[in-house]
Length: 498
Image (cartoon, rainbow, N blue to C red; front, side, top):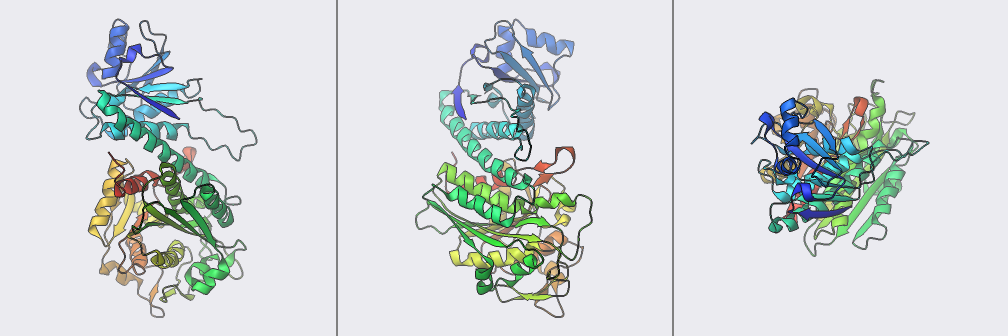
């Protein structure tokens, strides 16, 4: 995608589509005022007649306006003046793109970047423009017999800026946004693939493919025999019931000199039946999304590598299937983790923590500055936070605050949940060092406490993305979250933000 910035009048720019807005009570955005003047008050007449809506998410497409060089003008609702949020801004851009998505529109100009959107800078407005367009145009057609490309052939995105001094930051925001879209699209593709295609082996090959031709990125795959040698019996207990071999994917991006790496650990259960603790049938097909933690951290690596960020970043993905079988782990089994701690497995459907704990222990060898695990870990997190916020847990206040702040800036929001000894006590076992579940009460938190038992002396945080990694229903599909949040975190860490 190509990008350009302009300080020119919206009506004088020859483009396939220009995006402008209207607020409540007929107030026009800066770009809309330009269009209105050039068209002899056409927008104000349409507002007065009720043909233009200020409701967020609404869009009216106007064509061939007299005095306007743009072929199309997408007029989007912005709600109350002075209360334009980043969320409404993104909805407006998405609505405009949706309105022209079936056309042959190859370039657009977004004038909404001139508006006051909370505390967002022109950098973030440009970035959100590109991300919103990328998200709206994403299609998953890999498994269709006829792969018709129904998206418009968009090749150029314009960004209106108030002054030439804003141009460089807007361009940087667009470039970062484009790389984040690349990472999100990869994460979506991996998540949306069916489980008979996206197996642990497929996931490993995708990680290897990403490293091919990139001298700063390497991918190594650890097989089951090596896992046994390393003592990863907790991880291997999950994969015991399937013929699909488990893989431990280790990606290392080295571009930060001698600095300690950031390590991202992603849960990669390519299908979760629950094992012997079998899940109910309805919506079980969505358990292909139980590897979205893995998809998210691999997608983040794709973003970081595309931007050639000056950072050392490692990604560790334990990839498994969880199926029932004659050799499957059963409730009551006790296994020894790589850390040497023993675990009583009371529920084989609490499998994500069993693979993550060994991956976290393995990650110690990198002597990380920070380690963040990402997992579709618990239905309890969905009950607590719904599908809007990712759950954040950490014993480190500064790290938790940093992640939450990154989510706010990236419009990929997260909310901190507590961790304390009271919750950890629910994991007590009569027969092992601790159990893998602690009952229904505070289930998301006790899962975090379980992982915390393997992170002593580490600067660690846990992200539960069970409610945010995919959508159900008619619009079922992977969201690509939390690639924006993690990318923002890394961009901030390596001082790549303006």
